[in-house]
Amino acid sequence: MKVLFVCTNINGFHEGCYPFGLCSIMSVAKVAGWQVEALLIHFREEYTQAVRKAIEFQPDVIGFTTVSSQYHFVKELAVLFKKALPRTVIVCGGVHMTINKDSLLEAEAIDAGFVGESEGSFKDFLSRLEKGQEWRDVDNLAYVRRGRVHLNPLRPLMEDLDILTPPDRDNVFFETTLKKVGYASFFFSRGCPFLCSYCSNRAIAAQYGLHRNAARYRSVNSSIEEIERVVARYRLDKVAISDDIFGIDKVWRKEFCEQYRKRIGIRFFCLLRANIIDDEFARLLKHAGCFKVSIGLESGNEYVRNKIMNRSMSQGQIIKAFDVLRKHGIQTNALNIIGVPGETDSMLWDTIRLNRRVRPTTSGVNIFYPYKGTELGDYCFKNKLVDEELFESFSNERRGSVLLYPPEQKARLEYYCVNWEKLIYKWDFAHWVRVWGKKILEKLKLLSFLRKCRTYFSRRNRQNLRDLGPSVARI
Image 1: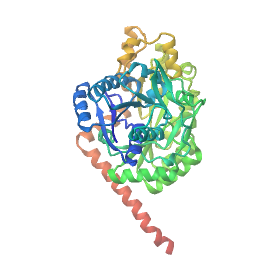
Image 2: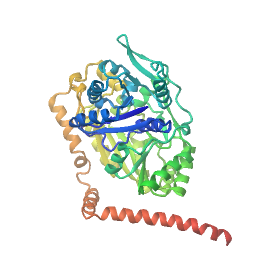
Image 3: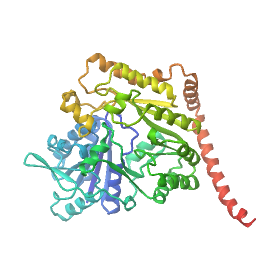
Image 4: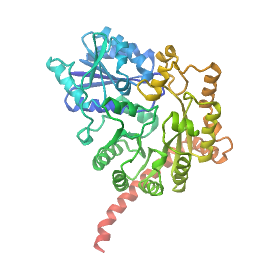
């Protein structure tokens, strides 16, 4: 049994994003003994080469992963693959398929889609296909039947994540990510219990008949062991913990931070919500080696943040979170969203002003993109706020708007997006010293050298402490 896994990243927004879900499925296929190949496609001009590689490999199955803004590329490729390999079964997964399975109606060349957590279902699907058995009744599978999308029952969400093998990293997806960003990312939990209106987590929970997508964790030991293997193999000086929100479970995060400090010891960064950050948590992070935290500030306007985005977070909580992290010497990255329906230019400037008030180390911004299946996305489509013709071919995700705004408003949003750093740090001399100092060091090739020195001495000190342990015990 041969499986070809395909990920498109055309127009580049998701460059540097390692596809955890797809690589987890790849790991399942490899462990089961099936032959696996991977394709990462950056340009339409690569379609011909991709089809040629598929013909050479002769896969029994082609599996895509996709986000909404890449789906039209997936549909194009599926047509080309099906024409060249008519007997090959083509399936698609990813968050887009989970929250918008009806999009299968638009894709005649895609035979089926996988919805939700599908490691076990995909393995069952491949086993049946290999044996020549009927596979359309596999759990979590969606397919078109008599002009409508039929979804088979979903397997319950996995409670014990340790039963999964770690996501595969011997592939072009991880190699490209590592080359691009210089660090490895890890996911140790699944789910987020918060109900942000623009986010897919609430929509994913709804697929399982749940109100919230509560976080489930791998064990601390399993998590640390994966980091140890990857850090040793690739000689990394930092890692990213990419959980939707790091350490919501207080017991888990305490044990993880303690074990990380003892067994890993290099720098890491993570994503947090402002309203769970306090002095104790910041101290724990700093002690463990956390050097940077990304926080979803999202909007500086109370109405936009809490009524439109459903963030359930006060201005005071946001300010306090940034102040506490600064106090403990942890860098911060503020994440912002502009261009949501109902936001005025004045409200947008509230976001700029709040960023200036909290003084993050860095600040980034995304233009709102309406994902079908999310509360805010569905509201936009239901109320005819989306340019649907543009949406169907739009890949400039989060850097342009697909809402039916006047041209001057769209141009203004794009201006804010491009010039965000200048708007936030206009008079912040210290920020520009950091930025240009880093650029100069990189130009002189000194930054990489200094980082390698820090990693070397950090590892050496840890080894010295381990060697010292028995001597101290004898004394």
